[in-house]
Amino acid sequence: FLLSLMEIQSHMEETGQLLMLPPTPGNFEDREELIKYVRDFGASQGYVVTIKKSRRDRRVILGCDRGGVYRNRRKIEECKRKRKASSRLINCPFEATGKKDDDVWVLTVKNGEHNHEALRDMSEHPYSRRFTEEEVRQIKVMTEAGVKPRQVLKALKQTNPELQSTPRHLYNLKAKIRQGNVSEKSFKSWRPNRSAIINLSAEASTRDSCPPKVPNLIGGKFVESQASEMIDVVNPATQEVVSQVPLTTYEEFKAAVGTAKQAFPLWRNTPVTTRQRIMFKLQELIRRDIDKLAMNIAIEQGKTLNGAKGDVLRGLEVVEHACGMATLQMGEFVPNASSGIDTYCIREPLGVCAGICLFNFPAMISLWMFPIAITCGNTFILKPSETNPGASIILATLAVEAGLPDGVLNIVHGTNDIVNHICDDDDIKAISLVGSNTAGMHIYARAAASGKRVQSNMGAKNHVVIMPDASADATLDALVAASFGAAGQRCMTISTAVFVGGSSPWENELVERAKVLKVNAGTEAGADLGPVISKEAKNRICRLVQSGIESGARLVLDGRHIMVHLSLLLHLYICHTHVLLDYILQGSCINIMYFSPVSI
Image (cartoon, rainbow, N blue to C red; front, side, top):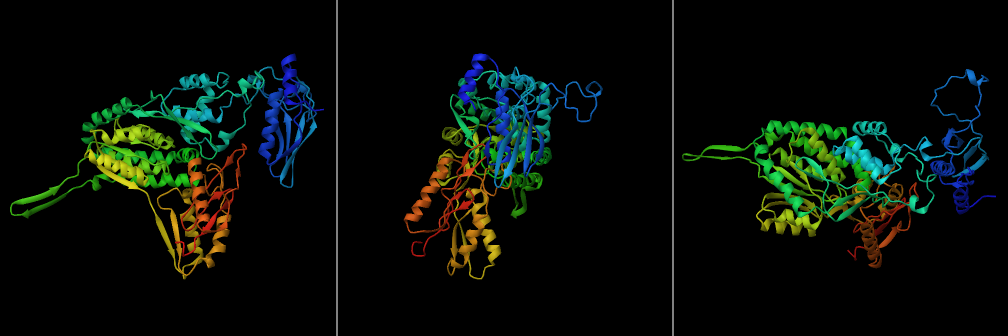
């Protein structure tokens, strides 16, 4: 008979030995889930599960990577067989099989016996030296901040004392990070629960690891904020805390402004051709690391990887534009405009400028702002969105690598207080922002009252009018792309569609095209839409859709109650709404509702 998990743990604690029981047969949704279950169970029992044979579409055979009896397949005496001293032998009789039956993977255990002793310590497990997904993220942040490898390992071991990885493993990972070869597969690769054999107590298995803190950039150095308050940066697809962003103190903010002010005289006198060369180098580095930027945006903001790459490419166009600053900064001269009078105008840098970013395009909005400003000869204070600061940190790292002098670009994090400090500081001469109407009006009024120049990009409302003779395919393609791109979280989203002559001829085809859109986490291959930025945003959208129904709207496609199941049994709730065409994206469905002409 099968022992319960509690009985297994009780026996292990009493005898100090592992039973090496076989996994429980059962059904699984997919192949990876089955393999992960068997490997986790094997690690908890003291044996190592590995794939012996695999046909990815129909069958997988799992064996145990331990044992003392050599499997002599070639009929050669063991003493004559040559092999490396460190190689592993797959010669244990244990064998489990996963077979696909219709849409379900069925696990059966062919032989649950072992011919060897259990692992004495988790350090013996061949996969125990792999870094976890969270550790990889921390290493990327610390590597980009210039932290040395041994210091990185020391910091990781403070949060995970059982870490088995060595400097050699870290050097290999850093090389992959620099080359942009850290794929999603390496992020998701299986590794054992390192405390499963060493300590079976609930306290050890539920120990939380501290998420990395996002640094400020002040004077060319990434420094950890001394702020007492932090905001969690949450992956909107999984609700996992990716990192923590500080509410920067006033003293740290003033240090950043002071550094920018001090760097301004030398930077403004730097030849424009020198500033241009830094932009040429920056655009080269952005292209090199575009996959890294896209992955960060997909994790922190929720966009699909293709959408995230588009985010970076739109911003890259501005960097390329800044490469022509020598021409863009030219002035004008009119000789003898009046009797004995010549007129001329010159374009000069203002001094310290600031940028306040919105969450929806983490890379593009940052690149709208600081490349143009600094290439003109200004110094810059950037405040990224507190919901997804990672892309701005990566871009700042690339700018420093491109040769940008210390103090020319600075980054501070925070919310309302930092925004108000930016508006009120006398050393900041100009502000650029992208945000909502409420935020934009507040910042414009407060900054203008301090005598600052303000560029305020706020809000948006876009309409599309469909004429009766419009091309059906082109119109439907445009509607779907314009409505659902970036999950509707962008200024150019079509929020109102007016069908001249009525919407009936268009409804069925529009619904069918909406149904085939695949909604999933942005990091998943094939996803057409990712989640909206937060649970609060999703709940607000649901309230608006319900309000539309109560006001008489006709709902022709309802997807509000469909959930997207991720590989870790997490649920992704995704939705977006429009005014005349109201959509909620959940699972593989989209809600579409029409308002009658009277209600308009």
